[in-house]
Image (cartoon, rainbow, N blue to C red; front, side, top):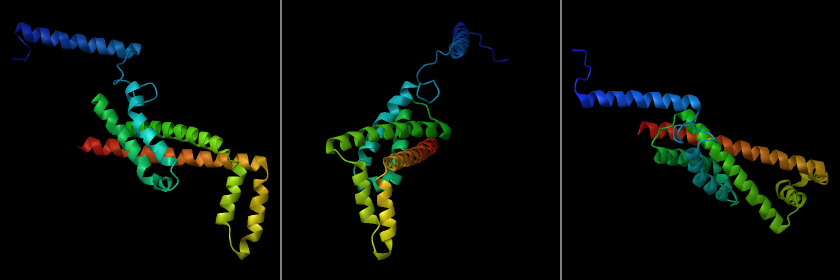
Length: 196
């Protein structure tokens, strides 16, 4: 009447389930989790593999000058793609927080790849950052009342410390934009795909 299995097969199945639960708790206590049981992070091989396609795609799109301005569309899309690939690879549905973490991992990879591409590109072209900033100042700061501002900005560019600070600030802004949008895309992907 209590629902306890009476047949030998049912008792064996119950014993196997209990043994599997004990083994899983032992492995968890010892830190021996399977790759898809590990928390989403840089120590989870399934999460690392899931971010490669999105990261590579976003990094190459960010090197194309006109497409870079559409980053608010395809950075979240690459975070979303990483969550989708993680779900297909592991069969687990991440929570929005885990999706955001996966999106942030994709953003870090995207930033690193695009930084390497841009450094190699500037080495091949032997570009001088001060010259690049001068060209941008000439294009942006125009007009009769802007001469004093233009002169001050050009004097600032001649200072190597100022150029280094401008490069550092632009790198930090790029990292913030990349991480922000890919994190949003990952969280959104986990939420939308979980509702399906």
